Length: 362
Image 1 (cartoon, rainbow, N blue to C red):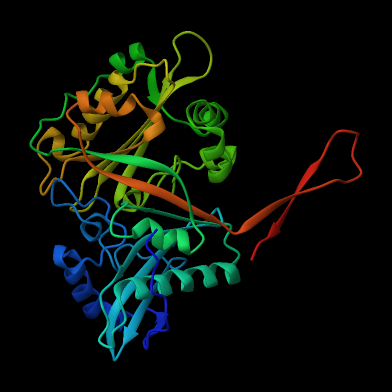
Image 2: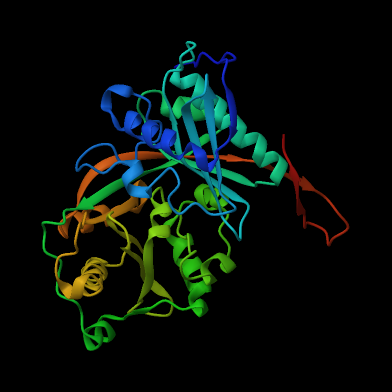
């Protein structure tokens, strides 16, 4: 493992101000330079020219009051930034941007980024954060940086992209949707969606992500489930969700989340399906729906295609997407740090039953 040289750089970490906008823009350009080696997350960094800043319009795009943005300043020069999205209905914090360039006084980019992460963790402890999430490429010491800050890796995602030059399928008719068993998702589907999620997600991942039925009921602009490395894109998209009804019994066989971009970025597609379900038609429907919602079926101005994250344990969904014109452009590691410690405590309950008391960890 690569050990960071974590000293005490002479600069300071502080909350960002609106007057930092020009400096953050310059930092953005420096970090986009491949020679800078200051990129810490990199979602994605290969394939088409799609960088983190262009995806999420950082550093100040769609910044919400409950989000956090800290900068590292040295000799009146901004040399690093970290941005955290805080989910309004959960105590989950997601680091969506972390960048640093070598400081004037000799502070390395790794030192700066580590200090910024530590600042986020301290703020989380003060504000009652339950979990810290981050997704990054496993290159340049990125994963080691977070693991030394107490994060643990729990999965990986393949990021696939469908070029804007590839024509989207024709939109589906209502009759075809009905015959295929595809319909819009409803809050009443929350239990069935939770069951679908449990059927396709390993138990350790379920425990860490700790999704609950109320999370599946909250559909709309702030809907962040199922979690993915590219979920921040949903802030810049009009979201629709559909389900595939199981043909051989009750319940759901598949789910698709669509985000049609309102900005100059890719559209978003997230698919979840049972191992025995054929989700090829669900993907074709989703791409056709994106086409129907963009410029009356024509090419969307400045369109960057469609981007789709797939967990490695969700195969063969990645092959179904590749069959629909997608290709893999990056693989990212998912990491999480829990700020809660689960302790089993016996109480006065019927014999053999134990309750779980959740206490704050250090």
